[in-house]
Amino acid sequence: MGSISMALCAAAGFLAAAPVPTVVPTFAPTYGQAVSLALEQKKPLAVFIGQGTEGFAKLVTDGGLTPEVAKSLKAEFVCLYVDSTTETGKNLAGSFQMAEGVVISDRTGGLQALRHEGAISPVVLTTYATTYSQPSLAVTQTTYAGRTSLFGSMESRPVMNAVVNVRDTMFPNAPGYIFPARSSCPNGRCPNAR
Image (cartoon, rainbow, N blue to C red; front, side):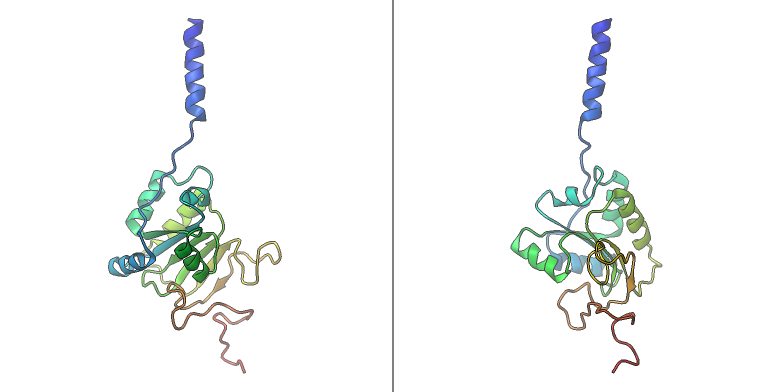
């Protein structure tokens, strides 16, 4: 009887220590295909920027996504993983001006709805997926979260969740691309600017 108890305890300990497998959404193979699919399906584009083939698992902390969030991302978004250790991924990450994080567009692909720089918890990603999958959401500004701020890293200037109007940033290096300068105007172009 004692050996059965010990065997059950050992098995329970093994099961508790076993790593939880990371659930990942379906990723488009290239940025161009992701943009085309997002426009065709009228879905927001969710770009995950990480490092290496296991970068997505490192980007989403605390054991990764729940199956429900992965299902939501698959149903409501077109997802793309950018491996910034490859030449193509490094260039694309540079176009987004982000080394690690998540960028979500609006349904038109013309605006970045969210820029979350750095690792992200499954709880926060669930909130983003719920918020930005709403068909009635009208995006007029980009929300900045994570380590992102308008003026540098969070360590130097604590500006969290700043909101800036940034047009055409879902298509890096496209005409009309505006990255916010140090300005109090929402899009860097004040009506009374000289």
